[in-house]
Image (tube, rainbow, N blue to C red; front, side):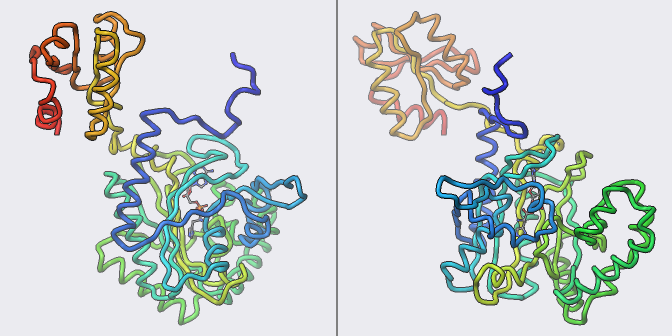
Length: 419
Ligand code: HAM
């Protein structure tokens, strides 16, 4: 066994091909979907001044317990990003692009969480943030983007859950009502929820502990605390989803793990696997956040999708398979290697995916390498081919024999065969 010091840290993974290719493909599909809606890509630093993330709410686990924060060599207090909304909003407040500003992003995030299936300490997200309007149809647009992304991957068992957390004042009232409700029966709550109640009463609603179930079921309903404005906004969001034929369920107990949300909050849940970690994406509206991070009052809405978990959901549904091979052509050269060198180069420049064998090995060894590569076609150059200025094409998938072709027709022939 390896020395423990030389293993990937707990909660992290090395991702090899073909999983790495599938991961990249997921990002490509996302870029395609959000590109169709005019979102630009934004790339922000992986670490920020810790204050940026503290704005996510001192009471949230993400800030209180899970942040990878550190002092750099000049004594600055920094933190690896636990999510990207705060970074993107900080970038918006700093550079003030014109609104509406619609951006997408991808990349790793870091949370010191209990590692388990689908929950990592370094995990990847794809997401969007749309800033500059309160229009409920923008909430609908971002949810539709996520929905179509899952659809394009081939996922069919994803459920959209939706709630409104009301505006800031509604939230304060609701939290007060929760404090009273849970406070009255706090002896019946689980030990964990007692602690949560002190730090962040809203999050008690998210407890999955059996002991808390009854008290959660009888807790006040957010819908009763909604102001007329928030109610109207929520109804317009629902109406928009109906128009777009996107199914959803209203879950009045849905609260999110981050504290910046007002009004719309939503989550995408994978029904195909029952891991405790089946939320494959989530988001909502965060109208006060830009101001909190030093910008002008600017409403915003967005979501992030966990790439690692979404791929697990794809496995569970048996969709979005990885591409089969790294290369399509394998060059075999038993004449010393110069033909392999020039042929691979030429074919790569023509846009084919090509590999070759090394060390001038025997025909048998090179053909074995060709089979192992997964390529569809082998191009063979032996002494005879060299003299007649030809190459031999061999189909590696079917035993249809082989054909000899003129060296100068090779690109044309391969285009016909492989494209
Ligand atoms: P979040 O719900 O914390 O929201 O994360 C979004 C998604 O990231 C989750 O649904 C899950 O799929 C994935 N995820 C979170 N933590 C982990 C983990 N430890 N391991 C694996 N996957 C994980 C946000 O991050 C917000 N920034 C979303 C947002 C954007 N809200 C508005 N705009």
